[in-house]
Length: 179
Image 1 (cartoon, one colour):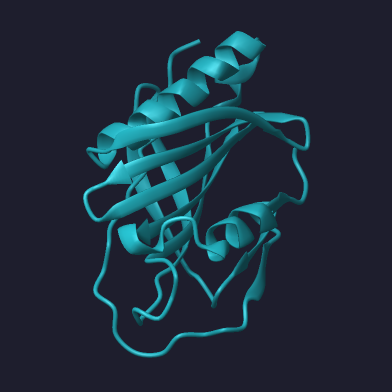
Image 2 (cartoon, one colour):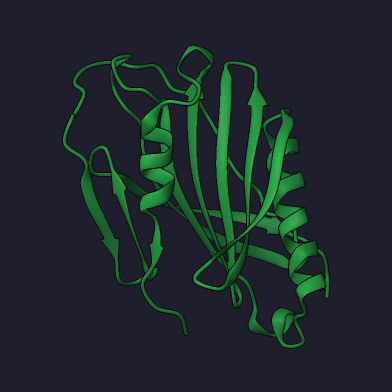
């Protein structure tokens, strides 16, 4: 199986107006997940070049508009890979794919990997990582569900590291159904 490197786009944007204290349950039947965001996320699709060709990266992102929020970005990313790439998948090949996602995330943000822990979500293999970036920290949970990669991520500024909203968001993620 070819090693897949997942591109994780990350950006910090300027902050502006209001901050919502009430978190919203966001459910995507189409992409089979549920998560709690501090406010309604924006949906977008980005084409990403990988070792196996161009893939759609479906993104659901909320960027607070005020410095009063604990974090700069909350997002869920879901990418679907060709099923034939996973036909003979093993624990080792799944680890290689997740290694590629971790390495891709670190390289794409020119960051320093602070931790990388193997995890499982509903029996599916995953990783929980923390990357130090120039302005703060990037927390990522990545899960490989058959031929789909789900990534939840939070970016926080240095002085807000370890805030409760990080785990509130990451721990609220769940997979609704799988093919």
